[in-house]
Image (cartoon, rainbow, N blue to C red; front, top):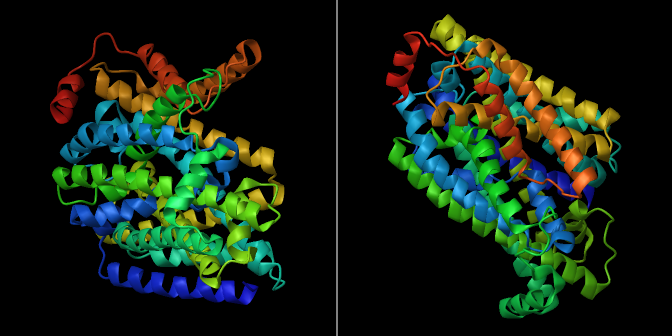
Length: 494
């Protein structure tokens, strides 16, 4: 594909995106922006969640990691499925009962305003870093494929990307995001399936031939029980998947805004159960696609890039496959990027307006609308600035560190919610920010000591240690003689 054809594909997709967003975002109120008016049927939310669970990084990284990690990611996917049931039958009833707009309002109800803002700030830091990193990776890909050949600078690339994300979400918020996510889901699944079909045609294989060849290759292994110290060990990935899913979906304002847009708790539960199944199927297809990409490159003698994340793009765009494969790769990458970036921008706007500014309690609806639009623009500018900083100062080691730091921030959130749900104790929440900061620091120290002293690699289960340390710290803040507030809190959450 030429840079011009790639750019035309992007512009065509963006045009369709804006039509859908404009239709969905008509006459949206603040309630519609923040919660989608809680009127979406379960099947609408379920379709939206398929694309929402996949970022542009996932779209290129999961297939690219097959050569090194085989199908081991399915161990984590099994944990994801269990985590979805925890969300459906523990968190969904709680959030609907409290009628929260932001998830972190639960922490205010349970512990107090300081806890509320602590959870919101940790979400804010995590989401702004994680979302900016995901957009940065995609901007780098498009810089190589489109903007460098056209002589356009990286800054213009970033500003154009964030301007489009801001424009399609500024009016409709969650209501637009849910419906555009359906478009993202359809494009994403179509890109994966059509890429598989055309690779099979180019190799002259049937689907049965492909399954047999993949099974005979070294890339087909799923279960890893042999080395407990390995980051691919089954139980580490499985339990890590459970807790990562609960924290990064169930306690993430971005992801849960879609689930909480359903008409009722029953619809939300149905949506989540179907999402668990759909997510497993889509990730399995991505892994199959990854194996086929490496097999295709091997059979055709195509030189592969040194970084696994670039394999899909190189084979799809420059691998001699039909033009439709490159087009579908670009559409899939764009759809997953806009899905994650648009939803993150909406969630950041909601959380900052409701949790940190407490706008729903301070201002009438008309002023709240003005504030919300200002915050939305400010969040887009902050995200663009963070992406620019990645481009100016970032390298692989720095980016990996930032991504780990972003993932650490979910541990304290998980610990705070777990402490609130599993116990009835009250705490002196003015000290909670210190506990929430120390838990990730101690988790990182534990990870380093475990690797140096015992050769044990702490992988995705690090979030469990992080949450446990948060809960231990909160236990030291327990109020021994709680006041009457405890009775009021119990009545609200029971």
